[in-house]
Amino acid sequence: MSLSFSKIKVLHVASEMHPIVKKGGLGDVIGSLPKAQRELGVDSRVLLPLYPNVSNNIKENLKKISRKLYIPLEWRVFPASLWRTNIQGVPVYLLDIEDVPFPAEIYPNLLNMDLIKPFFLLSLAAIEFEKASRWRPQIFHLHDWPTSSVAIALKWHMYYSSLSGLYDTVLTIHNLAHQGIMQETDLISWGIPKEAHNIEGLEYYGMTNLLKGGIIASDAVTTVSPRYSWEIQTKEYGMGLDGVLKQYSNKLRGILNGIDYSYWNPKTDPLIPAHYDVEDIAPKRKCREELLSRCGWSEDGSPILIYVGRLAEQKGIDLILLSIEPIVGHGCKMIILGEGSEIYERALKKASLQFPTNLFVKIGYDEELAHLMYAGGDMLIMPSYFEPCGLAQLIAMRYGTVPICRATGGLADTVIDADTACDGTGFLFSSYSSEAFLHAIGRALGAWNSTKLWNQIVQNCMRADFSWSRSSREYVNLYLELLGVPEHEDNVKPNFNA
Ligand code: ADP
Image 1 (tube, rainbow, N blue to C red):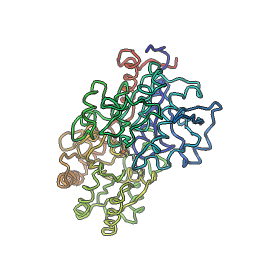
Image 2 (image 1 turned 180 degrees about the vertical axis):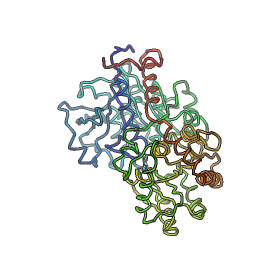
Image 3 (image 1 turned 60 degrees about the vertical axis):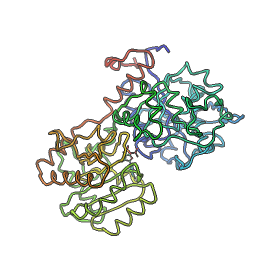
Image 4 (image 1 turned 120 degrees about the horizontal axis):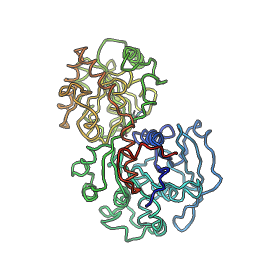
C-alpha cells in the first residue's frame, strides 16, 4: 500500500480507555499511547464502545456525529451512532448501536455469540467508520480479542474482505489469557464463511477463537513486552496458542508498554496529599502518614507493602495469601486493593480480620486509594505467575515505591534486581513458590534496614524512564514498515503534520 507521506492515520479500536472506561492496564495504554503517538505527529484516534454506565462527566462532553453508520449482521442492518469527544488532544469516537447495548461489566465470564455480538459489530463499525467520520485510517490498531474481528473481517468476511487492500492491521495482545472463545462455530450469519473455520483460521478445538483468528489475519502482531513475546511461544505460557504464535513469529514482536508520565507524576498528582520528586523525596513521608491513617493505623516505622491489581490467579494471589502470616509476623504492614475472584476476595477479607493491625484489605476499584498507596507505600508486591507487561510496577517505581516481583514477562524486562546491580530498582525471584517470594521480600527488608542503600534504590526507581517516549517510536516504526517505508530511527523525526 502506498503512503502519501504527510500523516500516518491510525484508528485504535479498543474496549477500554482511561478515563472513559478502565478495568486494568489496557485502559491505561489506550489512555496514553495514542496521545504519545500524536505528540510524534501521527494522527491517532480511538474508537470505543459507548457503555451504558459511562460517567456523566464524559457524557456531557459528547457530540453526536450527524451521519449514521449502518452495520450488516444476521440478515439485517443495525443503525449506529458515533459520538465524538476529545481526551487530552486525542479524538475519541464512541459507538452506540441501536438494539445492541454493550455489556456494563465489559467482559462477561462465559462467552457466546450473543455476548460477543456487540464487539463483532464494533469491529465491523470500524471498517464502516469513515462513512460517518469522513476520516479514513490507514492502519487499524486492534487490542485483544474484543476488536481482533476487524482483521478477521478484512481477511474472511463475505463483503469486507474485498476492502482488505485499503488498510493494514496491527493486533496487540495485552493478555493471552483472554481469547474470545465461544462454542458456536457457524458464523455464516455474521458473514464469515465456513472455509474460515479450520485449523488455519478461527477453529480452536472445535470452537471459535477470535484472538487466534486475529493473530492469523493481522499484518503484524505485538505483545506488550519483549520477554512476553518469547514466553507465549512456549507451552507453559502459550495458553494453547503457542503453536500458532510460533508459526507466525515472523510478524510478532514485543514492544514494552509505557505509562503517562504527566498523569502518574508524584510532583503534580492531585490525588495525593503531598508532592515530591527525585530531587526532594521527603514529602513522600506525608503520603505515608495519610495512607496509614486511611487504614486506621498510626506511624510505627514499619515497612508498608502494597498490592494494587486484579485478584486473579495470574497475579499470584495464592502466593500473597500464603505469605501474609510470615510478612506481618516480621512486623510489616500490608495494604491490598483489588477486586476479582470471589474466593480470593473472601480469603483476603478473612485474613484482614485476623491481622487488623497489620493487614488492610479494600475490595473494589478505587483510583484515589491506588494513587495514595503508590505514593505512601514502601514496597509493591507483584508475584505474578505470568505478566504480559504489568503497569503497577512502573507506576510504583515512578512514585519511589520499590517493586518485589516474580521475574516473568514485563516484570523481568522492567525491574533490575538491586542485589545484582548498582542501578537496581527492585527485587526479583524466579520460582513460583512462597519460599522464593518470601526470600525476595527478606532481601528487600535487608536493604530497607540500610537507609543509604534504600534511598539509592528508591532514587534508581524514580530515575528509570518508562514514559512512552521510546515505545511509541517503536510503534511508529512498525506502522512505517507496514506502509512500505523503510524502518529507520529518523523516520519518526519529521513532523508529519506539516
Ligand atoms: P492488568 O493485568 O490488570 O492489566 P496492570 O498492572 O498492567 O494489570 O495494570 C493495572 C492497572 O489498573 C494499574 O493502573 C493499576 O493501578 C490499576 N488497578 C488495578 N486494580 C485496581 C483497583 N482495584 N483500584 C484502582 N486501580 C486498579
